[in-house]
Image (cartoon, rainbow, N blue to C red; front, side, top):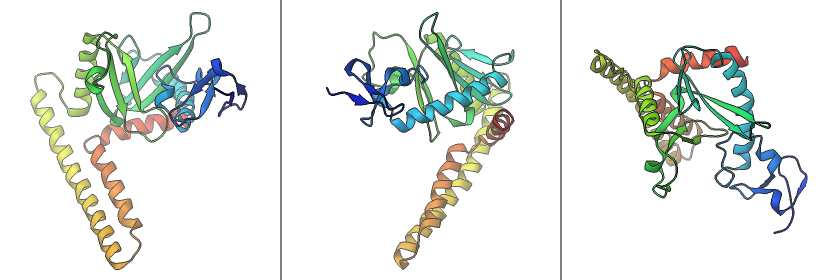
Amino acid sequence: MAKQNCAVCGKEIGLMQQVQLADRNYICRDCEKKTILYFKPMHQTLEEYKGNLVQNEQGEKLYEAYFKKNKNMKGFCGGRVLYDPATALVCISGTRGGIFNARKSWNVFRMADVEKYEPAASIHPGFDKNAPQSIYISFHVGDGMRCYIIPAQDADIKKLTREFDAALTGHTGGRFDAFHAHKAKQQKDMAGAMAMASMLGGMKDIVSGVVKGEDATQGAAAVVQGMENLFYAGREDMLQRADEAIRKALG
């Protein structure tokens, strides 16, 4: 294999120092070390790499502001996943290197952005059954890292699932669990119905525009916005709290 130039720093890299990304770009191992531990080069692109550096930079500030000395946050998977109910923020942490050259990174998301949280084996049928147990967590975001496979024991997975269920579905696990769950479902159904109406209206505008030979951009934008609203239906309060916390920390 020929020598390549690192797509990030530009230096020439030999065979042993080459790291190939999913989009066939190459980076050097020094640049790879700047990503969070869960960054998988063969599954990530150069765009995702650059996005993760931003996530790491912002994540460190958010970690310092809301997680580092927070006695009310909840930790899972040996502290690799943190959740702050007050701000509705979730922090994923990972450490590269050994004792003397450890490099820790934090990626922080809004709880409202959570898409999936399941045992990794159930997400990936080909997952090695003899490998250590892990949990798969994905987020509804556009840039940087979106999916994480994090080492976790069965008890960790169950604990995280219960807590995320409570935050996202209203299942509190307490005496009034059914009441809160029903109320949350009603709110989500109502918001979802409004989002669906917006989406259908946008699709109608697209069809009408195509038939008449008109610009369908506005209709397409309505469809995209409707899809976003549908995903976040019932999560509006968490969104508001998380966005406010992020603004305070990042400006």
